Length: 282
Image 1 (cartoon, one colour):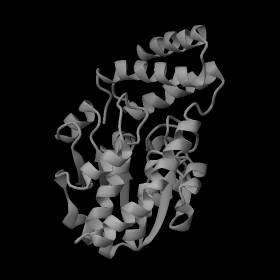
Image 2 (tube, rainbow, N blue to C red):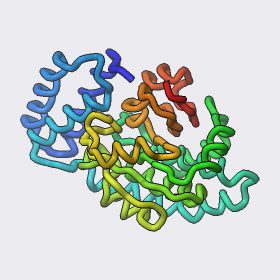
Image 3 (cartoon, rainbow, N blue to C red):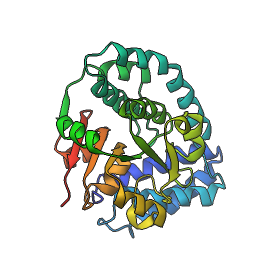
């Protein structure tokens, strides 16, 4: 997915929000805005938004000296998600289709996104998504590939969301490799966050090697690329991974809530729709 004009003011908004989390020095935050604003004129629209995000957040870190401004928020979101874990497992146990319910729960976790300038209530959003209709539901293809898969590559997105990913992985019943970001960026899941969420009990955890808030193949490690190419089935969570992989020549299942109007338009759904979309190889 390319960068659209609407992405640029969003980058500035994210820079201000992250700058305020990193520092209460207004002169330093102004410097963040000045330098991110100056960068924008040189960002090609052919870049994915996730690639551009890597540049923006590196600039914020360089100026403020704070590597992980979202650290406390991530810890809080993981704690809140874990408090809902047993309730969500009960929802699965009483449902007529446990796999589809687990998919819904995993998508519900996708609301935990502090890169978006939107308020959310995790418990309320989960309740809504459990009964919300899918805008796109390639469920039969998902079931078919799951039945035949020996190994699954599961691309994580946000930290609190990873607790809900664990619930889906438990339901998949297959060997899963869970992929995290190489470094802290926004509230995306890192290796430590995945451990805190309990993912190590249900999957092998690896880093993609990318420093972007999404999976950008040219920025990923050789180990990840080998696993990406050899996986029987790939599950991609969230908008950042969609931005980086929607144009890739590989079969991928995208699970997300369309929180951004630009991404909703690209997928051809409405804002706030939920999606389980299979993109066939080009």
